[in-house]
Image 1 (cartoon, rainbow, N blue to C red):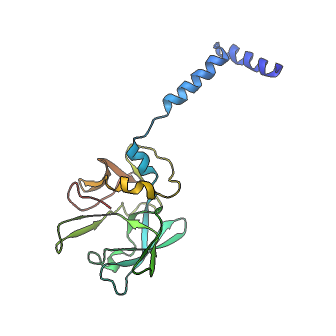
Image 2 (cartoon, rainbow, N blue to C red; image 1 turned 60 degrees about the horizontal axis):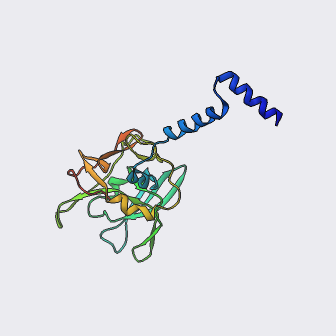
Length: 206
């Protein structure tokens, strides 16, 4: 107890402020420095959306819509996934391309459960069938694989757990503006650069 008393006296002597007041000031400052994030950004932060790279790509037998791909998601991890973009992209045009994907949704069985897709890509579309156009969201191709996608002007925590509960709330806010990917009008960035998507403004992205 004597040691604690001496420590308090020393602190008060150095600062000229009672130790109890000093502690309260520090706590107040910490509260002021903590900035609450908007709900939409909090939900987005729970989605592990990253730059990934297509390593292989091929048609799925007995399907005219699906392409089966292997995906480098960073740190040496490869995932299998499938996407219904066979009508809009040739496999050879996608191999080596970096795209934007969400990685923490539950794996989804596809094509009569012959494929378990462990990722989902982002794309925009416009027009009606049979003239519908689909365009993938592309980050700058020089960005490192595994780079996280973040809203411009915000620092967000690491995604922890599944995004299943919040993803529907997030995806309805993803739209194109000036041919870049946005959430609620805020630009999304990967490595400090915008993510391009060649569709008209206000096109839904998902």
